[in-house]
Length: 117
Image (cartoon, rainbow, N blue to C red):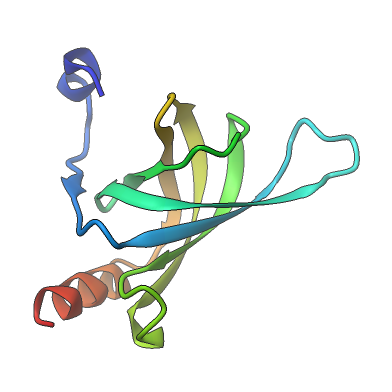
């Protein structure tokens, strides 16, 4: 992200552990057949209002997404968080998402559990 984008960010996001993965389930808004897309990638940074997902996959912008964030590489089901969001930007590295529904207590629980491992 360039300096200008950081300067105008309303909410803070923090770089996370390199093994945190996420899966996006998206209904492609540009498909006349309402095709469902599954996008996977690594979470680069995360905050209460959104996240940036590193992925090489083609992702439509804008689009609504169901989000599954896995804080423990599939080893602990209790460290999986679900949320809803909107894809708000795309770069050559991945996509930025704004959360539209997330349980902040679940997010906090996952982060603290991961920190205390």
